[in-house]
Image 1 (cartoon, rainbow, N blue to C red):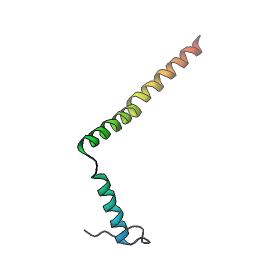
Image 2: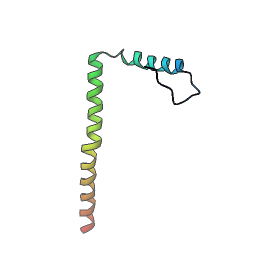
Image 3: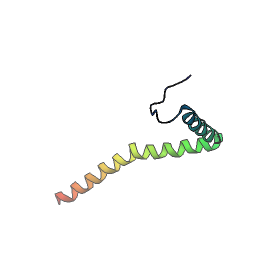
Length: 69
């Protein structure tokens, strides 16, 4: 399927070569490496969206308790 590139300064062969290189580099990963990478990135995302807001809330509560004394 041919797609017109957004950046008309690059030829379609250059963008196709970049795409092919990206696909080739990603396919070198084994299933075990992929699983390990997915788990580690999942832990990072979990920390950012679950643990950090709760930690911020606990910090705010602790700081507000100090102000009351």
